Figure 1: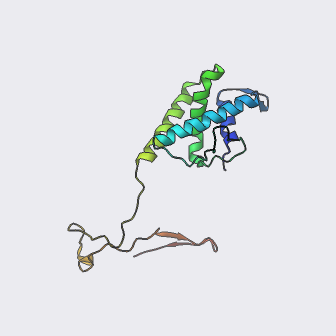
Figure 2: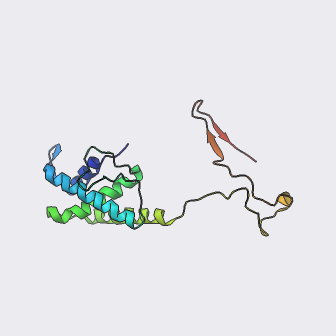
Length: 165
């Protein structure tokens, strides 16, 4: 499911209990301000190194509720809970301790994933080194060719192949 910016704002409004029946009791101006706060919050995160693929507008007022956010589904809850946390004072609302804890833990998870370097395989031009020479590879001074993934999936036939060396 792709989250739109409006979905994130509406979820944040839902956390603030701004619900009246099936719809939200907010004005278009409040939604526009919430979109602006959403853009500013994610821009602040990006400046701290937490980049989640958010689609930033060309201008501060360029966000529309129908635009795709570009964030992964795994980051959506963290985004709307932290947005609710930022919007709560302007609506005179107090969030539950569970919501505040979930927002903090989600942000900590995003920080942890941003701090962890992505894994990569070493190229086949990398020398093995003195500690990496078992008897089977004594005559091969370089690491083997990197494989993209030992599990290969053929999207056409639906078969899964496991490569073995």
